[in-house]
View 1 (cartoon, rainbow over the protein chains, first blue to last red):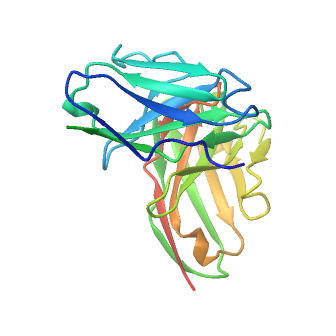
View 2: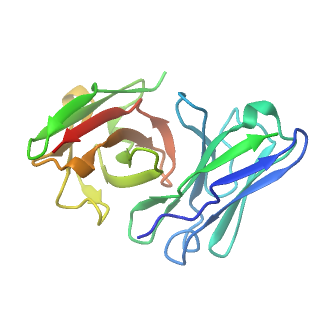
Length: 110
Length: 118
């Protein structure tokens, strides 16, 4: 299986909203409602931001939201803040009982 | 506090064997599956496989099956990733990850850098 497809980079100005896409196939993103998103700041541990497509773990800002349409999942960050600048990775459970990751997206806050 | 503490960096030669470890603490070890994830230099994350820590059932990505072995020692809450014959292309950072049920990762180890020279 090929990796899920994410844009290499996205950017936005403080206060704006930005969306990161994650495109898979009908055997992964499109098959289950099990897409997760992770945030990683350089030198820091990866942090779970969204799971099961739309759910936020306790402690994650409500500015982060997830959605899915067909084989594409999306992470939207509202009211961009400087601290949101990081790498973001998506992942999905697959019909083969495996997990697949996206290639990662670097978010730059201008 | 949940922690996954991995063994230290390794430098090996092609053809050598290697086992790296991931010691869990702060939760009941057998409650969650453990996955292993590879990150090659400058690249994204690749899921390698997972193990049911309560029963030792394993599932591997097709890309890694036959090349690595995942195991656990429940008595010491530790998961392992091992190679019998390393290749230079195995040079990467390897992360263990505690799964939360629906294939989400709740916690990550700090990563073990592995360098394999030819």
